[in-house]
Image (cartoon, rainbow, N blue to C red; front, side, top):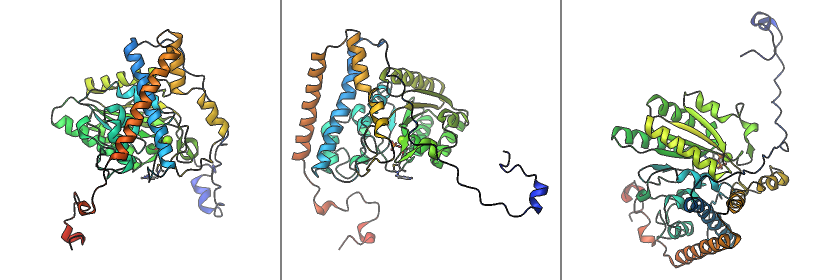
Length: 369
Ligand SMILES: Cc1ncc(C[n+]2csc(CCOP(=O)(O)OP(=O)(O)O)c2C)c(N)n1
Ligand SMILES: [Mg+2]
């Protein structure tokens, strides 16, 4: 790369010490462009098409309830909501098979739910109850369920990527046909773990579907403020990995791209990268005052909300009426209330069990007294 000063090496060696370079100017935060909402026919048979809507509604209503319970102090600790991004989990998970493995992030409630973890068990986990899917020890960021091949949320940004590569390596060595789908944010692509993971997946030809949920922000940092290369496909392509980018607010596009991706990985035994361009409507977590973006930007993105735009398309096609939508929504609401009651009725782990499942023997940890 050319030196920005333009001075040759020879003259630079005798020139006075250059002034300290100014930090590059950050792009203006207010500059945003919001594409038109997705339109056009839904190319699925009615049952499947409504299933996708049901999936997104379940995630949305469950998380709205979680936000309320957080306000009431029933759910504590960290809570990262996926509201606005539901089309990604809904469209992608329906492209995978039961034997495939899923690895996700701390924004993983929807992925766990749509993978088949019961809403009751998720809600109990949020409460920290023993009946939760991680026996109350994980909370919101550590939902886990081996039975559904859901290999967890993960509090470490990029932390799931090496795990996914390890799972895919195990599948390959054991001669299994499973695909490992790894969900991560665009912020994780700045981590060394991303580069090491995708490099090994490409080099060793491992069946990983890299699913980047580009919601444009990593906590309060917009992509263009932290990355010189904002075309995320280029980063994957640098490792010779097939890469695609789709509208992550369009459940149809997400599902179709994920089907193509899963098939590519399964058939060729090679990794693939998909960028889902999406947007989160809520703050990064319940602790975030959300001061780094224009409120008008959030409102503009709401015009292409995944549930709202997809329902409109279904209605236009005669696959859904308003009454049917309300019925479905009420059914989801009942499921949410059932989950809350289940969590409320759950039990706390007794103090005597505190050192169970610890790797350090109690006598060495000082707990055995
Ligand atoms: C290794 C590591 N560094 C920093 C953090 C703090 N942190 C938590 S979330 C986050 C932003 C990640 O953004 P992104 O990957 O885009 O995912 P999103 O939250 O947008 O879904 C950061 C920096 C962390 N948890 N782990
Ligand atoms: Mg992000």
